[in-house]
Amino acid sequence: MPYDSIVCVKQVPDTANVTVDAMKEDGTVNRAALPTIFNPEDLHALETALEIRDAHGGTVTVISMGPPKASEVLRDCLYRGADRAILLTDRRAAASDTLATSYILSQAVKTVGRYDFVFCGRQAIDGDTAQVGPQCAEKLAIPQITYLQRVVDLTDGVVRIQRSVGHGWEIVEARLPVLVTVLASNQPRPPAAKRVMQLKRARTVGELVGEVKNELPEASDQQREAEVQRRAEALKAERLLIEQWDLDHIGADLSRCGLAGSPTKVHRIQAIVLTKEGYTEIPPTEEGTQRLIHELIVDRTLG
Image 1: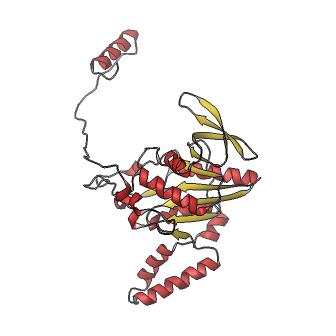
Image 2: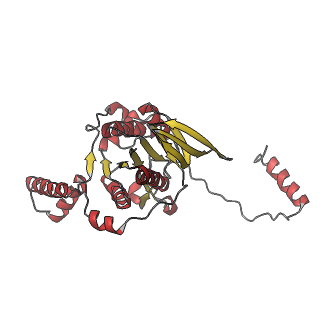
Image 3: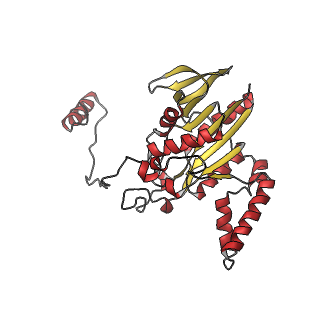
């Protein structure tokens, strides 16, 4: 029995290379100042979906909400085996918090149509909230299973999943459709060389607009628009046009998107500088351990 999966993926700032310019004065991330990568746990979510398709048949559709540059992670998904890629980009979605983001993504999932699984990484490294996946499940009115470690069994529309509970694991069973958030618990496949050669020219319309603007700086707006249309039609004929949606396409309520739909507010950003110098050496003895525990209790680190 084939199963159709939708995977929500995100291009995120590389938090391993944070600079002093990482934050804007208003408390939002200065994404332009940071290199970007494929959100690590989303990559494991994609691999889980691909494994289910390989074992049972079906399709894997990936959706990324972000600026036009996010098409980079969609190409990566195609290289790894995804069947369909959709970029959801709209300036009106800028500054969306988890509530607004989950609403927009749930609308996109509904627009895709039929699905058996919705997969998300447990959390994104630029926010670490782990809220978007569960909120999407609530808005889609489907069951959710969080912290997937592995799929135990999938038969006749019922999935059994082993999930982490922190100090151990448990087996959870759910009838499809279901939303699942995934831990870094598998080995994502690398991009396939053959697919890279076949799909390296895949583009969104937004990317074509940028390319035409750079290549034809002296052309009129009408000429550029005609050239973008020509290139888009050529890519579509070769099945190399990455779908690009906006909020109107998914029928989103604009009052629930972007800043208007985001109740989360940043009141203050504070840089913490550790000024204490030196260190205390604790001998590896019972007396030393007792002294360490005493100091931690006095400092209210413990107790």
